[in-house]
Image 1 (spheres, rainbow, N blue to C red):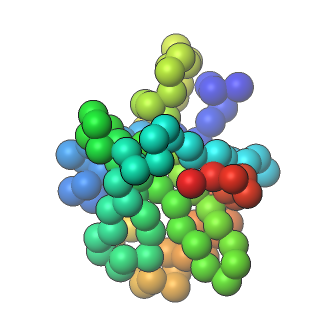
Image 2 (image 1 turned 120 degrees about the vertical axis):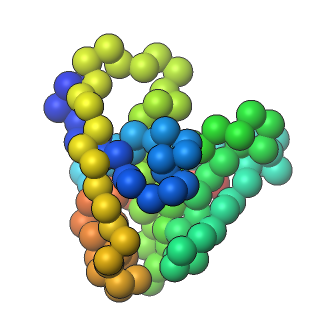
Image 3 (image 1 turned 60 degrees about the vertical axis):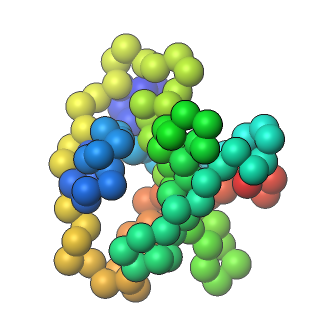
Length: 120
């Protein structure tokens, strides 16, 4: 139920500029897809360890994904859902600036959603 989702509002300049509210479910699966495939921009900044997925046509930040040790995880910008739930909780402000790349990966591995095998 969307009212129970963990909604996060990262305070980095990228997420604030995009107005992102992210969510994930470590027990679920996430599938990113787009058509045509080249309409997806993969943007990296900061530690360079994560692909931030942006639509080349409209500029919307869809979510992010990371890959390491054969594992792939992602987080979804909840505001990109076609039918935005009316009971979506407010985003909890989060600041990850002090995390090392290793700590960031461990947090993501435990909190982000595993990517489906055919996710872009």
